[in-house]
Image 1 (cartoon, helix red, strand yellow):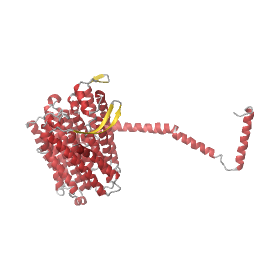
Image 2 (cartoon, rainbow, N blue to C red):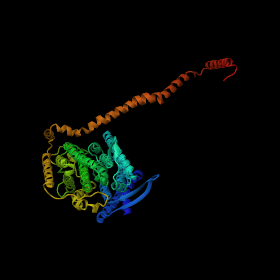
Image 3 (cartoon, rainbow, N blue to C red):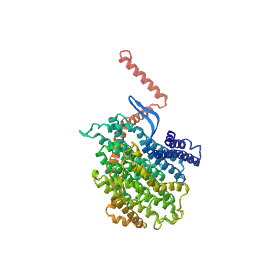
Image 4 (cartoon, rainbow, N blue to C red):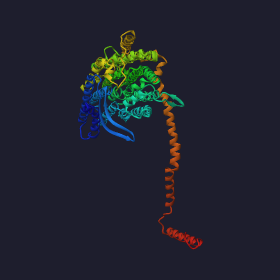
Length: 640
């Protein structure tokens, strides 16, 4: 198993290095095939690990020490690959989605010139995520954490000629740095309390003895709650929770396959993975767990409302990702850690399916993303419609589809936890479910049903994608159909037997009653109603029906405007102030620029004395001799 683990983790790195080093020696087709081959080997190895883990019933643990990469005094950090049930689930999901994105990109990115850079970024991004989930200590996890942040910047800004892509990439990078700062403080607190960064060992020490409280502003605060909040804010940045979510929709500026990779299985799931991995810590906290619950519930609700008024097909799916991540945080907060990870698993399949299906539509529509210019695509793109319908039904939580099993587990756990957290989070999650049905039905209706709103020339070019795009869509559709049914007993009902001691895995309450059935029935009805209503574009009627709320939602709850006013503009003006008065008129004027100017000015004056005329030089010589005589006479007959 150690060989399979190495192949799974380092296969994407080899793909990255190959694309970066040998792109001049190989043709574009050969380069893509070699990168796909290395990713395929890694995916096969990851799938083998996953199957072995499932068959083992949770009794699965493989560790591959690589090297001791930091050693200072008594502290040492070992770089190692660790495979347990939680990390293997993540490795499998990341590799499968990444491999399918590689295949899909073969046709989708066909017209691009600099494909070596694209595939190198994809390989490096996948490797960084695998290093994150296979880490056994927080330092290595942070290495992967920062790696996916840097790679997301590179991938979102892949089309760097576009100003909007550059701004989106920088926004994602900077917003994530906010969360990363808190993650670093959480790591520091973890080390301060346990004297180790090894996750398993540190969590055992925290559980064995209650640490002394931290003193914050003169007030003693439970240390575990402080750690929980710090790690929560760190996770909020990567997983785009309310407040630090603004980078996620703008990330749509990258190529659509990149959107599928970032939003389905890699970067945005890192925060969910972190809190699940630290589940013993949150189990012993009250305030921090409550914060996780409310952050998740509010994120699911807010993102759902914004998705309802988006007209860019990719942004609808992006806000849907934000909302589903909110569900995962809600599950983590109420203690259903295995339910949250199960939803992360099923979500990876149907969300990648929706993004790549949207990519097929955009590719066919000559890069048009505005749903108001679509419509009627059902007839020329029947297969794509079928794939998008499967992904949409899984997202809505239609019975027997994957999203139904995982989402129902979180809703049931939230309802069961009402004595501790109240009914508020559960009510918000139910409203979010209805919103999910509404915006998903609206997206399908505006895109595929009704009459076409594209111009005649564009309608003539609409076509189904080829095999290299349809094959990944078919496999993801299969995952969206069966992953819930196949994984339900293992992920949820297996309890601790499946997850071992790597994650807190309570038995999820499961009894079909009015509380469980009613939201699903209402969601299905709203989905069908939205399909019927929006098969004809009636955006003005929607705006009129929600009244003053329409502007509020179109402006995305004014988060961007608020941050622009509070942070961006003040920092920009402060930078201008220091640049103009501090740098240009201060340091440069007195220092480098001032000295240079004086030197040039002096040399110009001195140059005037070099006339090239012999009488002038003789006069100067005579004046010098006379000056020397005067100095000798008045200096006592000697110089010095």
